[in-house]
Image 1 (cartoon, one colour):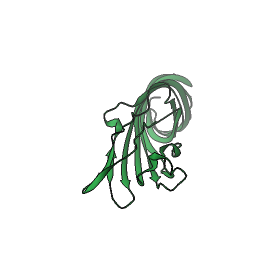
Image 2 (image 1 turned 135 degrees about the vertical axis):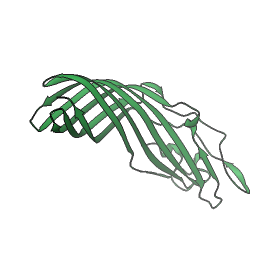
Image 3 (image 1 turned 30 degrees about the horizontal axis):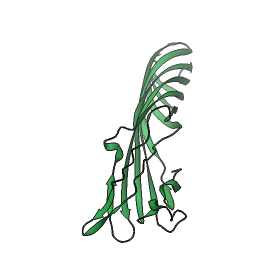
Length: 220
């Protein structure tokens, strides 16, 4: 969404990303501080549509022809393992807790492009460069969690809080797809038209995920 002009498009529309995950931890506490091992998995996705009108500010670019819409779907799945320190302020029914630590994060990046001409010819092309190419990264990560817990028994509590997970897509791995110069937009009874298909850079720099969570905690 920061490289619309590089594609030769006149405008781009980006929806809000959506995602979620699961995580758990096991550890030992010397009230009020303890250590734990955290394991987590997550997935997120976002759509973007690039409009190629051939009359916009980038109309001189050969990438802008033919006039078309390209809808991109990006998805990312992966996991995290981390060692964390947890501090807890205990109450008889309600307790507050905060945890933070460092670990390793792995993410696999997926992309699909659906292109349709907008000049009335209805030529189409569906393309997924990540179907046969591994695009992923491994990164150091940090995680911070703050939560409130409500005891339902002396050893079981319901938990609600906020989790932050941050890593970097530019350290280890490949986060770009290869260029594919042999792609064409086609339709029945229509002459195929070549469609510019450069290398797509799917992620770069710091990646930060923040989300609320609900769960359960077991132990004293």
